[in-house]
Each structure stands twice: as structure tokens, then as C-alpha cells.
Length: 406
Ligand SMILES: Nc1ncnc2c1ncn2[C@@H]1O[C@H](COP(=O)(O)OP(=O)(O)OP(=O)(O)O)[C@@H](O)[C@H]1O
Ligand code: SF4
Ligand SMILES: [Mg+2]
Image (cartoon, rainbow, N blue to C red; front, side, top):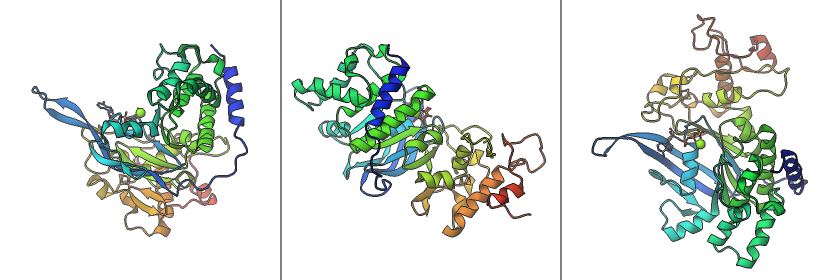
């Protein structure tokens, strides 16, 4: 087995190949490559004695978003919120219950098998688990060459050279191509998975938590590789992850999901500096700060995520939301563009003037981080904040908007 040190050297060499590239255009605008419209997917959760479905898991519920050519779109949310289900529907592994998937202007939701084969080449999936996603009985050379041969991408006499080129590009020495997956480390296996995905010259790659199974020191290398490949090959990514800290590195825009619903979509910097949805605010507050002098006000959510089998009628986040109002229990809010290119599904911003949106978001955030949030100020032991909050004077000094005194 190659050591991780060797892997790091190869990774560094691969990463340096493309350094110094010129700044790219704004990838959050321009031609729409993928247009997901009102996509839903429910699974049968239980059947009657006669096999009739009696209850359903609402895994994805009326989700719409667009990805532009060359863009990396991050999709985050807690476990079970429907991220993988969306990815699987996009690559054709699952059939949507309703909604449309438009790719390069063509509706690909219900393609016939021949057309689907072509579409499936254009959109590839990189799996979360590099141990389970590679066939242990095939050599790395066979794994990477298989899609080239199956899809008739190159004449037989050129396949070997192409495999070498792909392996070299992802930071694996081509001399190792006759080894089996178990002879490689986790990071190297993920690189093989990436080479296999690239073999069919895809336009969009769905990366389903591609680094979550890897050692922290290897994660950054694989992320750098994906970023380099995007710049070099003009790829577009849907990048799925649990937490906002992983997608921050690679995404141009980020969508936040909760219990099958998209709660917020914004360009990366806008989302990190001006989170509107209370759920996004809570997710962001959980990212550890690299600066030990910065006091972070962590918002601890109380309660469990409701079951997707019988999701609440109102806002999906209402049972854990620290900012809910009466309307939140009645219906789920629509995802609307509350600021330019910043979409949010939250009743709190309904009928608020655009110039007041950020101020309100800061107020919601500030209230949530107060020690007595949700306790009516009476339960001093039930502190939802894991680290020291700013005093009102400190918060004011940092320019935060304080709530009006009651
Ligand atoms: N084949 C299936 N049959 C029944 N339920 C399913 C199936 N696949 C997924 N689900 C359910 O759909 C919901 C969404 O699952 P999904 O795997 O998409 O979540 P996720 O956001 O990718 O979670 P994780 O972060 O843990 O990977 C979950 O409640 C899950 O149990
Ligand atoms: S709609 Fe209501 S419950 Fe949902 S996130 Fe907004 S404030 Fe919270
Ligand atoms: Mg998943």
C-alpha cells in the first residue's frame, strides 16, 4: 500500500499543476446548466396486509434550484434531509415522484433508455464512501477504463493511454494501475473514483459528501483537487455535505436543506455573512472559529428533527425554531428572493422592506444567542449557548443590531 506521505506528495504535485490560474468570471450567473423544478420524492414507508402503501417518507418536497455552467453549488443539511435523494434523482438512480429536471434546456425527467444513456454520461456521481464504491475484484486500470469502453468513448488502442492520463491528473502514479482498491489508502481510492467519473467527460458532477469518510489531513487535498479539476476542465459541481464548513471552501453558492425542503440559497459570502433563515444561523454558529480571541455565540437547537413520514404541516423547522411566529405552525413558507440573488423560506421576512432584512436577521440571531432564549428568562440552568456570549455592550461595539428593550 502506498503511504499517505506519498499520497500527499502526489497530491501536492497534482495541485501545483494548475496554480496561478487567472481569476474566473462570476460563476453564480450566466448560462443555466441544470434547472431543478419542484422536485419531490417520497418512498413507501409501510404497506397494508395486501401490499397497499399506507405511509410514505417525504424525502424531498418541492425543491427548486438552478446550477450555472462552471458553478459549484453546495447543498448542506442535517442527516436525512434529502441531499442524497436529490443527487440520485439527478443522475437517474431514482425516479422523481413529481417535478422536472431540465439539463442544458432539455427535460431529462422521463427520457427513453437510449437518450438516458447519453444524459447519464454528462452527469456523474462521486460517492461518499471510497471503500464501498469501487469494485474490489477489479484493478484500478479496469475500474477507470470500464466506462470508456462501455460508452465507446475511445478506440481500444487509446484506452490505456487515457487511463494513465486520468490517473496522473488525479494524483495517482500510473505505474500503480494494476493494483486493486484495497492496496490504496482512502484518499487514493477517492481519487480513483474521481478519475472514473472523469473518464466519460461529464459536464456536471454530483459529489455526495466526497470527503466525509476521509482523514482530515486528506480532506483538504481532495477538495483542492476537485477545485483544480473544475477550473481546468470547466466542470460544474453539485457538492453535497453535512456542514457549511466543508462547502465553504469549494462552493460559489450554497443551498441549505431541512427535512426535505430548501430553506435558503445565496452566494457563499452572502450566506456566511448575512444568514437569514434561523436554521442557517444555527448551522453557521456551530462552525468553530479558528481565532481563539473571537467569542462565538453558538445557537444550540433544542428538540429532534421531526419524522419525514409525517412532516409538520407548517414550516418544517418550526418545532426547533427560536424565531417562530404564529404563521410558522400553519404553512411552510415559500422560497422567495428576499434580497438580490438571496432566497429564503421564512415567514419572518414576509412584507419586510429589503433595506430592513439584514437588520432583522441580526436581531433574530442576537435574540437566539442570548442565554435565556426559549426559557422565558426564568430557567437559568437551561443555557442554549455553549460558549460565552457577548454582553450587549460588546455586541454593540462590534456593530451588531441589538433588540429594542421591552
Ligand atoms: N430507498 C429508500 N427507502 C425508504 N426511505 C428512504 C430511502 N432512501 C432514503 N430514504 C429516506 O429519505 C430521507 C432522506 O434520505 P437521504 O439519504 O436523501 O438523506 P441525506 O440528507 O443524504 O442524509 P445523510 O446526510 O445521512 O446522507 C431519509 O429519511 C431516509 O431514511
Ligand atoms: S418560517 Fe418560522 S419556523 Fe420557519 S424558519 Fe422562519 S421563523 Fe422559523
Ligand atoms: Mg446522504
